[in-house]
Image (cartoon, rainbow, N blue to C red):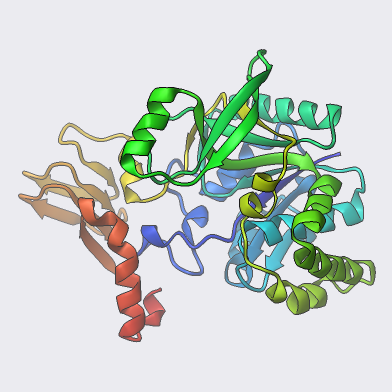
Length: 358
């Protein structure tokens, strides 16, 4: 049967101060009236039952994740004791699903992306499952057609056509790292490159076999966890073995070392919501080019992003291009052009022993 795996262990530090260690961006309402992880579950509802949706998260976020997704069985929330990147994450989910369904196909996606529309996403998912069902050795990725020369995304170079029917499917010619600006511009001009959006589909047994082939030490650790599952000791086995696993992405561990990989041209609009600068793109702006959520009064204020609550007024005068985020215990005021440096604020908080605000 088909299972969906939602990877939900990220920290979302670029959305501080709303995003915290216990409440990262996937647990926030950044685009719409549902949190990002709730929207991720919503887009799966038409093609997979909640009993076959799995979430991989961490200790700090597990309770809130469960509260936000009451439809999921408690056992379907897998808790990593520490961060080990996406290869161990995918592997952990795969062995848990194989324990219950040895013939499973799994569809893997991040919890913190915005995708429109749900119908287009369901169409893409159906295409991926069709490909994997026809050839269980295949790994399916999704590629987003670039709309600008991004230096923040990895790229997939498409090869020959495999299917011209919508959505189109291609072989993968190569994977490319996040490029510098001129190279990103070249990729855009060439028209043969997709953004790698980190959404995958494959047989659970196939991905475990490939982890064994390319990362045998990770596989050995996963097999020890699988042995714990068979003896009803999942929590203990994960706590003991998972921290020992190598930290590596599924891209580096498997995908870039495997030949039978195909890419589906995404028929949906995709945004990874990487920083506060994503909000104008997602939520629009007013006549002064301000993107506002909450109680706000702006005088001679243009091009600002303002987040507050409906019971705390933010008033501005004579400002241009700022990010202003108010929460109950912290407020950020930043030059929008410096948004990538928010992580430096968090480092400074650590240095000042202000860990309560992280």
